[in-house]
Amino acid sequence: MARIVIFGNSGSGKSTLARALAERSSCSHLDLDTVAWDEGHESPTRKPLIDSETEIGLFLADYPNWVIEGCYSDLLALVLPHSTEIIFLNPGIETCIANSKNRPWESHKYDSPEAQNTNLEMLIAWIELYEERADEFSLQAHRRLFDAYQGRKREYTSNEGWAS
Image (cartoon, rainbow, N blue to C red; front, top):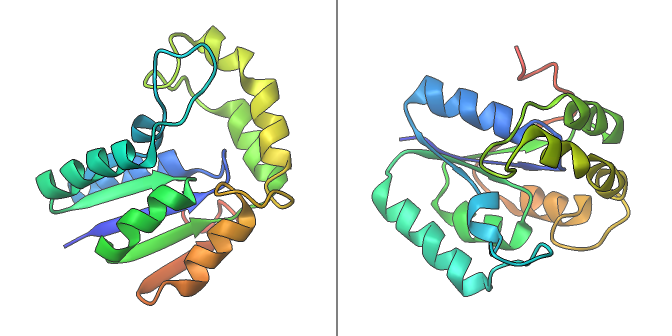
């Protein structure tokens, strides 16, 4: 049974690795972005945690094998007890920025490639603060999750180890 959680900074390669592992292992894939944000607001607004938790619970109940990826420590903490393995992608700020500049259009997040590119400058500024922030999206929060996890875990500090 595969129940893999992947986390790290924006642009670290979470979605790319999650799609590859899900395909290779015939697992379902959940991008936590799809359960974290409340659509229909002019500016990005997080859903209440209980709403995201409900959606995650439905996913876990429906799929015995999965890959879940995201940067939300509060949501990751909900799925870690159900996981068989975690992967922390921590390739560094410069790699995350380069990956973000080269990422394909994420149609589940943006209406068009142009809309995604409009957001790029803000995303890069966000990525650059990863090591300094103290919120649920920070290196600090991800390090705590990784260090506390008692099961199988891997940390990649470059895209070289897993991207091939």
